[in-house]
Length: 110
Image 1 (tube, rainbow, N blue to C red):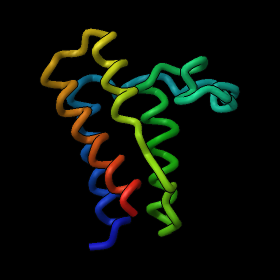
Image 2: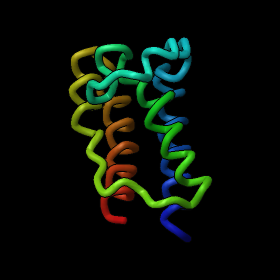
Image 3: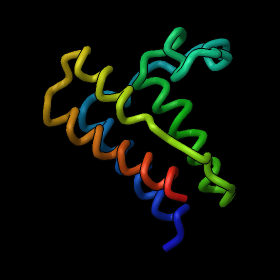
């Protein structure tokens, strides 16, 4: 199995976990929101929006094209902080963190 195949599976796990935690259904951000210069578009989106519409979408495109992956990925700490601040259930936080940590590892190690 290639790293792109593994990453695709990890992205599908993240999507399923977000759906199970009720963090998937949301409005698509306005087109201008994608022009943010802030990390994770924090000035224009909430983190789950960024995960769905930016992070997953961009990595899906790289997987589909079998393109080179970014040199480094370290999203899990930001996600953990956001989820704790929002009072997301501990079990959902754990599953979401694990899903994103796997993506971080796959991208960074390849």
